[in-house]
Image (cartoon, rainbow, N blue to C red):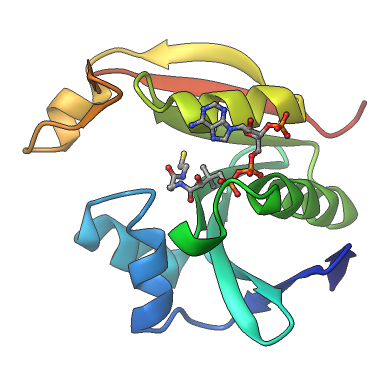
Length: 158
Ligand SMILES: CC(C)(COP(=O)(O)OP(=O)(O)OC[C@H]1O[C@@H](n2cnc3c(N)ncnc32)[C@H](O)[C@@H]1OP(=O)(O)O)[C@@H](O)C(=O)NCCC(=O)NCCS
């Protein structure tokens, strides 16, 4: 499908338990993850025969695809694979005729906020209190309470 150096991405028909485990790194809500692995389009990222990452997207309105989850296994984090995986997904979305990709992440998710903006995503909005309303247990990252969803958009037509 798409090859970026040694990383290969491919679509999965349905996510198995190990795949869902990987996605839980990005979203602790098991029910939500189970739902979108059946309703969305599932991708995996492989290095040779080792699956190191998973991502799901949902076609949205007006030719926009919503990235719901992007995860790299902890063993493989911090080595540039998240960036390669994201770039491969953007290329795939462009090849499939989408005009934009959107993603939502927490105000406390400093790593993903850096990753998306370095890749060219721009902040387009904030959903106030999203994580307070939808997640019963408090989420804290880097000593910051996760309260709001930061919405980002990548223009695939440029
Ligand atoms: C977020 C995630 C996918 C990034 O994958 P990764 O392989 O670790 O990221 P990379 O090594 O490719 O880093 C890409 C860029 O983001 C930046 N970045 C990543 N994590 C960062 C952090 N915690 N703080 C600051 N910058 C960070 C890196 O500096 C890098 O920029 P560079 O290319 O200029 O050096 C991975 O850490 C992960 O799976 N996390 C848990 C799940 C998650 O939170 N997913 C996001 C859901 S919205």
